[in-house]
Length: 424
Image (cartoon, rainbow, N blue to C red; front, side, top):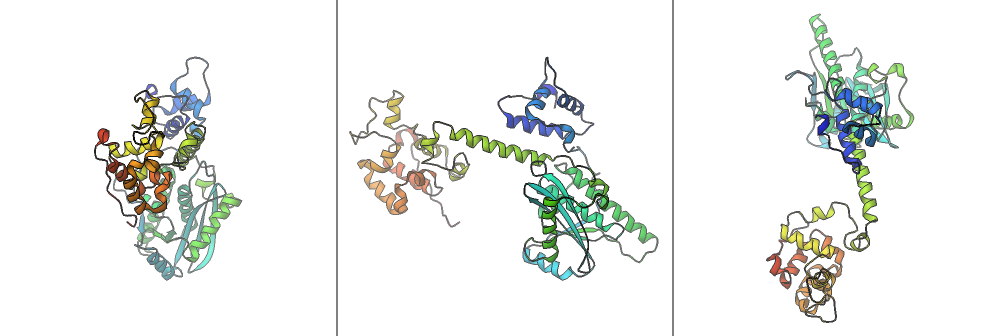
């Protein structure tokens, strides 16, 4: 990305944070990296560039962020890791209990507790707890539980030391699946460290085999064990990970050299923070809007995406009619008269009443028969405007009611909707 191609909007802090966060993960050999670092350290008084604006509005220091390289291991490189994921939780627990008291077993976990991320690992030898390590990554706004899971694996591999390859039990399938991939991604530096350690373990095992040691060749294996299902090892490491988040890391000299320094902030945590900030700003803006007091009676969940999910499967004409009924900007006489497109705001069938969405849905005598059919289907909820215009299954009955009245047929034609089965 060239400097000139960075688009800046001073009023859109969320977009600036995303752009700056992505740029901050560029490695030192990337052309834009030195310019971004320089712009973040010092602002210029005259002629600031787009990078200066990004650094100022986002407040991100690229030197504290993780770096994501374009390439990782060579294609076809064997990382020395095998994985095992059972089809069901019950099968994973049965396997865990059957193998718990045989050989070297390591349980690792990452946990978010009190807005802090912690990681832990415990080594069991023939079912006996022999050693453990814990590590506190930092606040949840800078790290994710996923990074905690990966850090736990690094702690577990460090507990192996000179031991032969062993099994690591993890309660997160996404972590295991990630280690199978070779694509650049967030927390890449942790994944690379794990593969680096396992390659060393595998290399040492091969050397021992060549020297005639009575040891068969094997690789470090990662096994999924379902969490919170009475696995002794998993329950113990989960508790230890929470202790790491609350009380801090083990003694520094016990930790691997890789973890004796502050880890860089993760891109995923930054993006999650931006999403949360954007959501809070949207809610604040919406509650200050003039339309909030009127719309909250129809859809109190706004600005949540519930309406988008509720209208999934409807065509454009149907969604247009529903949206117009919710906002009041429709082809009924009250709104048309307000924009000077109708001579009178009154209903053509009820001269003493204004024709708006509430009148058409609940009061107009012209549509009494269609309204009675709607009430037979929806019972009491047929007289709730919130249910009729927001509920996923009810809005289809509402569309069929409006279609039978013929009030919108001249503009939209047939707007009948196919009913859905709530039990599916």
